[in-house]
Image (cartoon, rainbow, N blue to C red):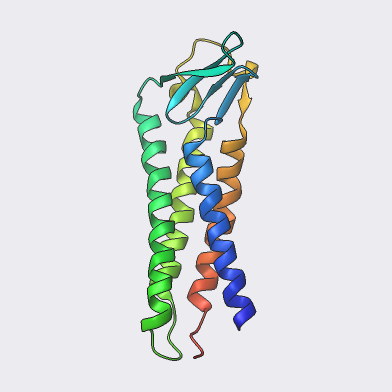
Length: 165
């Protein structure tokens, strides 16, 4: 039981860290090695100063929905972890962690929705006249997709977890 509990906590923290990186880091769409776009900024690498020069992205309804869903996912996953820590001390023996599991699973579903919207509406989100075949998905987008099953699996595990002592 202790091994399951520790494994679940580690899984939760790893998925939360990956979710934070996917939401805040700047690589959802890569045009070239020196030009990238994320949920918040369009960035160019300046070779003269060796720094990234970023400007805010053009707001579209699709982009705002992806931003909101990713932030909601982070909030629900964080809330889930805090509630779990509280429930460890307050739930009676034999109690289940339903609320924690539902929050974590909901974080996975909001992340899934954000990734789907970005996948199918990237032309409207990027709002760039260039051909999309000249770019590719960045590692943050892939990281967000990897988080989906991790969040849902940990949510299901929380629902089945019983407090022994």
